[in-house]
Length: 162
Image (cartoon, rainbow, N blue to C red; front, side, top):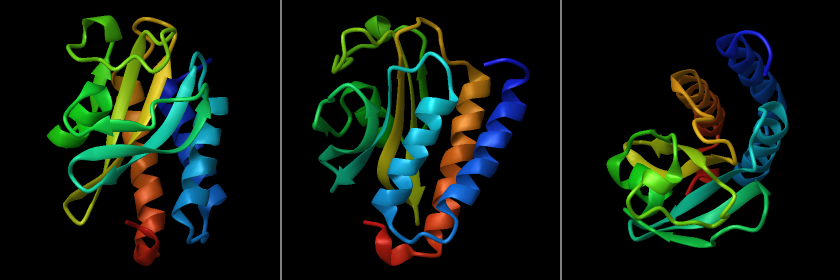
């Protein structure tokens, strides 16, 4: 990604807002969001959503990349931990993360942002990269902003949310 990361994420946020606009369907918006991210950010080998199935597991949602783990127990792996802790997790090297779930052995770094609506975690946005240290605090802030745009547009259509 050339230039300023913050500016690039701001442009992605504008594109996302225009892309999901007034579309009420959660899955359609999630699919378009991960396509935008996957093709808009360099050095990703996976981008996608996992949605909460109660508070015991996350289930695979729309994604771009290789086939993935379908179910992740709440509190396990980077995704399950981010959901349980209700906070973004940035992992420079997944091999250093205790309990990492290797859906794709080529992944080296990961960034997971929880989706929180009305105080409840209903899923996570998960980004993987084959490059160790691919994600930094600018990526964390940028992806949190993208999730905020996604949630803001979905709030008008709360019936579409789980």
